[in-house]
Length: 152
Image (tube, rainbow, N blue to C red; front, side, top):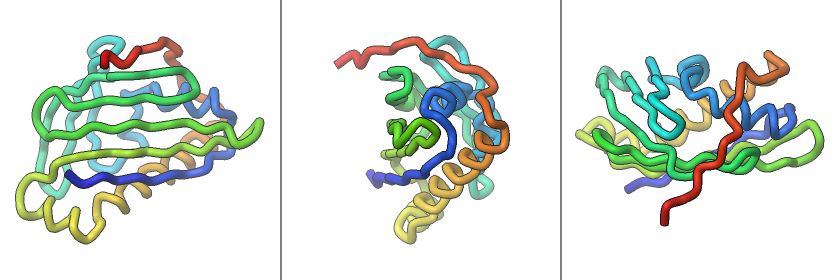
C-alpha cells in the first residue's frame, strides 16, 4: 500500500487552519477529483470522487480528531485508504499542514500512476490549493472543535 506524505506552510494561525480543515463539505473547493462530500454525522463522511474518469462513492470515518493538532480517518467501504493530517504551529501567524495518506490503488491506471508519483503530486497540489483558499479568505468558513478519541 503506497504512502504519500506532503506538507505546506500556510500564512494563517493554526486555529484558523484547523477550523477550515474540519469543513469537509468544502473540500471540493481545493481538492482535485473530489466532487462532493456529505458529512453524515460528527465522525462519518460520504465522498463522491471522479479521478481519471473513474467515479467512486465511499464512506469514511474520522478515527481521531484533536483541535489544532490532527484529523485521522479511514475508509469504511470502497477504495481502501486511511490518513492523518497534522497541524503544526510555526509561529503566531503560520502553520505547517502535513498530510500522510495510505491507499490501495485499483486497476492498472491507478497502479501505474502510483509508481510514477501522480498521487504524490495531486496531494501536493491539493495542499497548495488549500493554502491559497484559506490565505485568500483570511478566515475559516466554520469549524468543529470536538474531540474524537482513537479507539485503539
